[in-house]
Length: 188
Image (cartoon, rainbow, N blue to C red):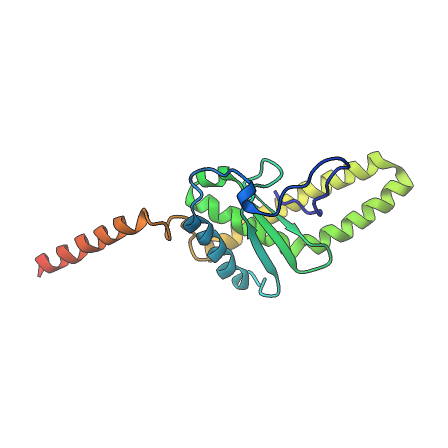
């Protein structure tokens, strides 16, 4: 799910610090894994026709229990993606689908802003309860559409592998390459 409104801080509550070092993240998040997410988002953005967007991958957790969220800066083409620790537990194909899902939200943020403006008018005419119901229905359907688009577009994009850049994966890859070369040379 994406957070499609700007984060706000309730009076008397402290906002989240901007420095990612202020958050304790799962041990599985290595600098290489963060870089893999950042590089995938940067590579997938033009393929998803998001070249005119600036998407930052923040190293802080989402504010809800989603695997990832995308938060836009209103009336702009800037957005912040947050990825949860639970993302690490997903199979690779679901990790890609999650990243693509969040990126697809960028195309739909302006629709959400228009709908939210209409819901404010609805609240003025019919009350807060009508606004809340309409907003919930719209958000549910927007998420369903975003998911369907991500399911359709994800397989057309390059695969995502969180461990491509990790030091732990490199020796295994080199060993496999040596074995492949050795097998080829003995079969000649």
